[in-house]
Each structure stands twice: as structure tokens, then as C-alpha cells.
Image (cartoon, rainbow, N blue to C red):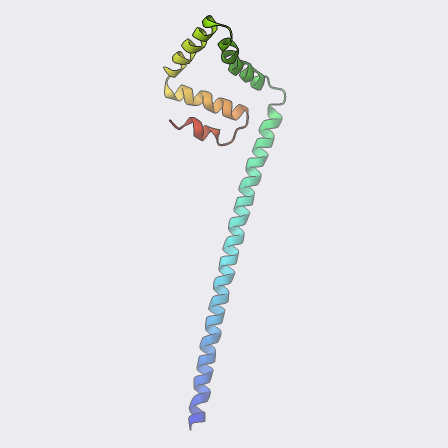
Amino acid sequence: MIQALIGPIANLASSWMDNRVEQTKSKGHIAKAKAEAEAKVLVSSATSVAEWEKIMAQASDNSWKDEYLVILFSLPLILSFAGEWGRDIVTDGFEALSGMPEWYQLSLGSIVAASFAIRGATKFFGKK
């Protein structure tokens, strides 16, 4: 009689365990698929950024924009060593620039950052 009860109970327990194992495997497969999908998105995003930077670098090969900005940013440095009159020009210029609207100052920072392909520098220009 006991053996007649043990068999069905053992089968029930075995079925329950098999079901739990399958559920665990399913959760593992779902987690793996989700991780693989997220990895693909990250790779795609990084590839897009790299391609954009490559295109922008190729587009600026024949441009004088970078040289212009280097000269423009070198002028205050050079004038600082040109005596009192040079320092006055630089000081007056920066005072005038600080009086410009914030959007203009941020635009200048963004132009420089984009020109020299400094990723993330635009975040710096937005902080006070």
C-alpha cells in the first residue's frame, strides 16, 4: 500500500522538479538574449560615433577652419607678451567677451570643440 502511494508522489515531485528546471533554463535564455541585444546596441552606437567622427575628419581635410581657430586663440597669448598695450587689448577683449550673451559664449565653445573633435567638451562649456 505504501509503495502504491510513493510511486505517484515521486512522479509528482519529479514533474515539479522538471518544471522548475525548465523555468530556470527559460529565465537564463531570456537573460542571455537580453544581454546579447544590449551588447549589439552598444556596438552599433559606438560604430556610428566612430563613423561620424571619421566623416567629419575627412570633411575638414581641405578646411582652413582649424588653422583659423589656432591663430585666433594664439593672438591673446602673443599679445600678452607685447607689453602693457598688448595686455590691455587682451584684457579689454576678454571683458567684452564675458559681457556677451551666454548663448553666444556657449556657441563659441561648441564651435571650438567640434572643430577639434573634442568629444564631451561641450559638456564642459555648459557648466559654470
